[in-house]
Image (cartoon, one colour):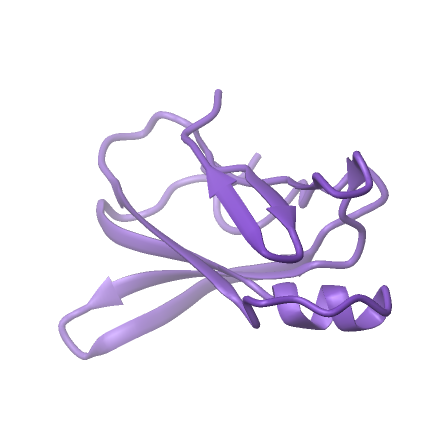
Length: 110
């Protein structure tokens, strides 16, 4: 299992957000380096987003929210959402996104 996982829920519809592209990057001395990517499945989840162990440090998830809303024919305010977080140790990190066309929230899940 990936050390970092995510899922996306469409709060406006009350359903999983299917087909949202997500990229996982790690911050390096030279900028950002991609460590994984995928798109949400029928449950709004990406079962394998990246490796099962990552180096500690600052990471970010970038959600292609504008593409998702375009595909559903709805206007939206955020073309993408980026969530930056600090990873340390070997524990699992779950970072969900609760999404609507004009707002979002996130938290560290379990």
